[in-house]
Length: 111
Length: 114
Image 1 (tube, rainbow over the protein chains, first blue to last red):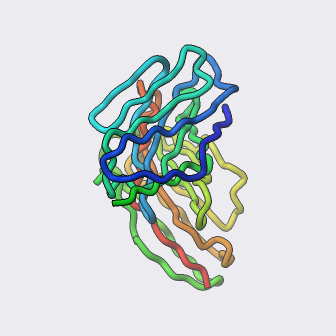
Image 2 (cartoon, rainbow over the protein chains, first blue to last red):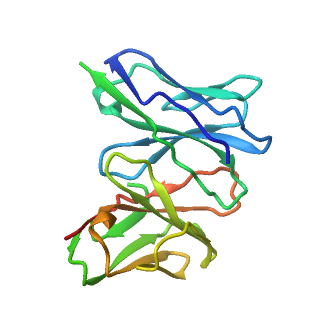
């Protein structure tokens, strides 16, 4: 499973766009990139998943460059409730759904 | 609400006690997972069940014993735990072989071992 590297923490203000970048230099051909959000004392919640280029849903966008060695989660106009830990995971979704969580990025949104 | 429930939400037990954690999902998923999350640490995968068969045991001590009687229920039996086993225990489920790797997590059981 490819290892991921993300910033440990980030600060932002309400209404701003937040971009969290994840490095995964050893990503394999069959690997997908998945992002989860976790609030304190709760289970992680799926945000978005992609393989290449750009994926957008009602919550976020995921940008993946052509070499796929990194990805950027974009949260538009964050609010205080977006304060959470964000995890980037890389893996072959066909391999029994085994997820390896790293340290994640602790996002703090301030008023 | 993710459709995955866990009981109890909080549990305090002594090192000599025996207790069980329960996870239930009615999402039609056929893969279920136990994770452990210690304070300020990332999630650690403990066990994976696919179609009721254990397919992953991530070197978990034998004082943790999982049980999956059917695709909707998953248990984690606990006995003679240590204080360092205090953590948030999370259950998750997904469609095995599905088109996405979306795991649905329960709210977790906060376990304290005295």
